[in-house]
Image (cartoon, rainbow, N blue to C red; front, side, top):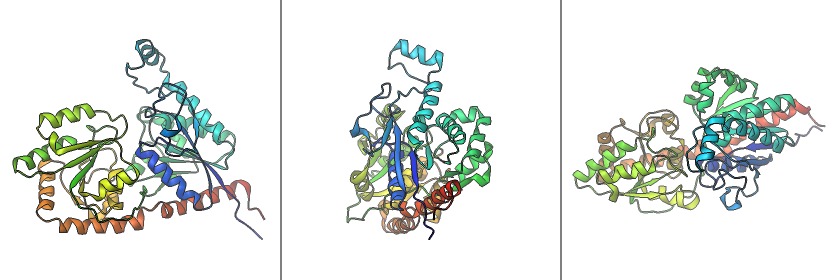
Length: 398
């Protein structure tokens, strides 16, 4: 009698517990395991860890303590002076980040070589494009199937467009939006190699919280593409109308532009309306959203997937622009606005006067999240793809 072969997947991705990518990685990996797929989580230290320029990683920094770590210093392409002037000059003159990331790719393969399939979760830094290039080359050499999930386009691959042909040697390339699929095809990736999936979110129980605030996610660069200056302008308009609100702003670890953003709020005399938070996760994330009247996503670039899906999962209405991938997730249930402070202020004023219509929108988004964003449902087809690739590789065992 034929039986499905067991499949072991080496999943390579971010595991820093204070990062949205790690949150997604862990949710994804846990859901795949529920489909009776063995998953070995492989990670590395990067710009988020306390060990950025060292080889160590402390266990309490890992979202999955059972993950296997490649301990290798991370040096970015544009290093700062914090490590000291000698290192700063060495990093800039010798472009140390290139051999380091190539070495990281080799070490990723060394950790993953036992697996039937390798799955690389491409973001930035230690999990950027150069590591994928090395990993795909080694997988091709040793006839091992590899899948890539692309969250963001690495600046390196924009400067070296010819290297994007590496994706055409992957068994599958997963992306989280039509926008990202279009970006990859413009870089020369075959459209038939690309498959669009949903970015998952934990679906928590809804508790009877009182709605007392609004919420905004500043990501890793709060002043780039997030619409934060427009948020400040909206707060000024509300203040001038004697409408007092509370806005919770939380950011990714090591957020660029955070000091300037706080200075902008102070200069505009709205800092008293803002509560600043570090990256939220688990129960803290759930409570922050479920106590919010609306989530503000006035983005003009990048990706709004994290705040949008968090809001949807917690039944929170979303005031957003139609930029990048946002409409793909909200559909017709978004409270869409132009990327201006006045438009944001008007939307919040509408909710302040009567929150009932917005609450109904939140209920619609919650239903949509339960249907589309649950990790188990998202990974069902992906787990089938793993099995298919393994069958193709080893044949059906009887």
